[in-house]
Length: 138
Image 1 (cartoon, rainbow, N blue to C red):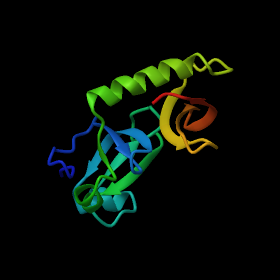
Image 2 (image 1 turned 90 degrees about the vertical axis):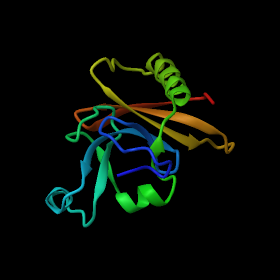
Image 3 (image 1 turned 30 degrees about the vertical axis):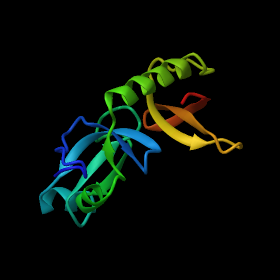
Image 4 (image 1 turned 45 degrees about the vertical axis):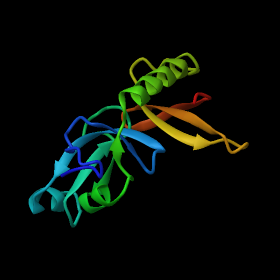
């Protein structure tokens, strides 16, 4: 299974999904009917964990292989983008109102009331959203 760029999809890939609005890690590649049918899917797909746990036991979204190969709905995050996301996480960690040391984090881009992109960082605990903060970083 390949991204539209031609690069091979691999477990552990750090990716954009939802048209560059969300980040996650590929945690499963479901190629055989036994695999994808066991998740209630009807075609080869990948599972992307978006809660920061990097586990297929965490919160995940499924994307069919045909969607990955036809467009840029899912694509690899570059090293430069990963560095920027790390800075966002660091800034967010200083903004949470509660202790989130045991939390996992999801990172999403959204628009504020001025139609400007901001980062939303969500702290999850046990797969449940505990707290979120917004970070203004380009």
